Image (cartoon, rainbow, N blue to C red; front, side, top):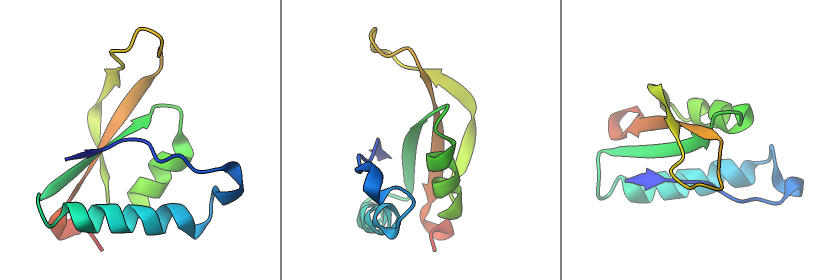
Length: 85
C-alpha cells in the first residue's frame, strides 16, 4: 500500500495535525498489509524527516515522476508493521 502526499495549509505545518493523520492512516493500513510506502518529493526535507520520526526508512533509489508536467523526482520511504510505534 502506498500513501502519497498530505496537503495541509501552511498554518498547520510543523504541528501535530500531520503526525496524527499519518498515525491514523498507517494504523488503518496495517490492518490489511505489512508494509506501507510513501512517496516524497526529493527536495521536501521536512516531510522526509517527519517520516523518519515514524520509523520509516528511505529506499536507496531516486524515482522520476512519470507525469510530463512534473519534473521533480521523489524518494520512496517504507515502514513495516513491526517498526511502527
